[in-house]
Image (cartoon, rainbow, N blue to C red; front, side, top):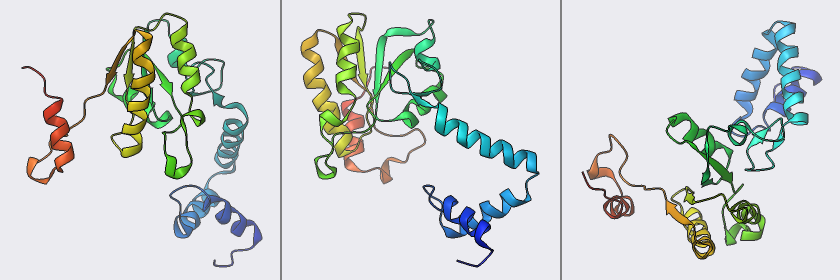
Length: 199
């Protein structure tokens, strides 16, 4: 590391701990912060500290929030009988950007992955079963990613949820809009064929 003095070097070191930030990016960010007006730098520091101290998981779905319930769970206009199960908060954010889904979510905070030592007990499955046990839920949409671990998790959830007498569905996946069939892998094409709908 270039020697910019202990304070700047410390800032670069801390920034380089962030995911996706290498040494050069950390140096650029550090110099950007150093050029900021003091008020903006203080606001950034305060926002980081406040987020770290005040943000926690929603007691209902596992989303990030600074209240008891996240904005989605607290929204009485949403359909609370419809739960979409996702792997993490970023997946929830992706679905929210579509502005199409009007139900609520349940965040597993991971997927079953024996190779990584993640079992069903490490996920928020017990909390999902508790929500369903209250009797309001009619359908659970499993929206884990189409990876080996995501599919394993989806099959596991399906097996334990179907006996509960609720509708269990899986998001469709297949050919992306604008995709060229010639360049799409066989598994994706097979999924697209299986998930075909009437026109």
